[in-house]
Amino acid sequence: MKFGLLGFPKVGKTSLFNILTGARVSVDKYATGKSQSNVGVAKVVDPRVGRLAEIYKPKKLTYAQFDFLDLQGVQKGEGEQSLSLGEMRNVDAIAHVVRAFGDPEIPHAEGSTDPARDIATMEMELILADLEVASRRKERLALNLRKMKNKEDELEMPIVERCLAALEKETPIRSLDLKPEDLRRIRGFAFLTAKPLLILVNVDEAQAGSVDRIAEELGLTSWTGRPRTAIAGLSAKVEEEIARLEPEDARAFLADLGVAEPAKDRVIHAAFGLLGLIQFLTAGEDECRGWSIPSGTRAPQAAGAIHSDIERGFIRAEVVTFDDLIAAGSLAVARERALLRSEGKDYVVRDGDVINFRFNV
Image (cartoon, rainbow, N blue to C red; front, side, top):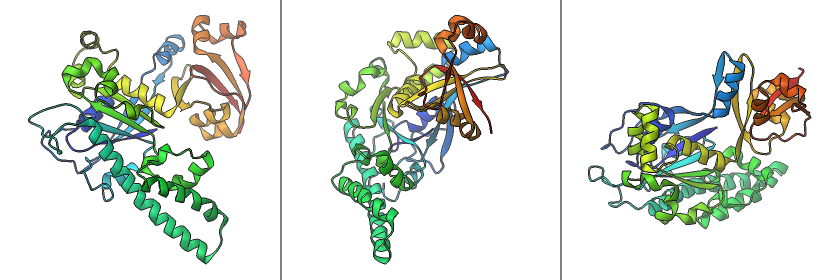
């Protein structure tokens, strides 16, 4: 799963990228943008994986992960031509970093700090970029259909027209109630406003203790109820200070501020909620690992997250809940207590399932 970090210049986007991924990309607070992209990985440190490792003593411990792509800041009014937005079409979701901090040494491009304005402005940039793509596609489909009737083009045309009508009304595609088959038909165009949107509000150090209430405090509640949209707050300045501390000192610092968890965990949890993800676990002497999948995934497709051959040759899934396995202390005891179940292809995987897949190819 890949998130694209998006933002106007001087919002703290690359600082956040460093916090999430542990990278050390240089940040020039006076720069108006970067000429290169940065790619990094944020591990989803699920403590359940560590508990399994205590039982199995594996050779390897692997956490699920998110990839983050940090691109050059988007200049206002240049969204349609922006190379950054072009690269954003290859990500699964967008994280828009919004500035809510003040700093006289880093002037805001608009002259004042206004998160609500900047969120709306960026949304319009995405809409205009998608409008151009949708308009070109409609013209191409009309030309194709005039030359020759094609069932796929005929099915695609009303979907594109619906998207185009919404964009012309300044409505993002993610707000439309499109059916799964409709989304599959337009997937190739990678519309930016069809992607889930995570709004990350970068606040002053003084506001770090109220990040859980940031939408209410900054008047952004109208965004919290929108389809496939979520908001999380953080203070990059505070998080950079925390990153330099020892773990025990970092926990004490967070407690003093009244912050329940560091920004990395908060962003990961918000991403899981936005994307509707859960984790299942695999455990053995070779490796203990967490796997992220969409909620509602059936057992064969969950097996496919590990390898396509396992999905193709799926026979059954041997499942025990994490809590039951920990209480039993071993898989053998869990089996003796009839806590280990055999599930077929219609089984819907649940968060925290520890699974061993049986397959034959």
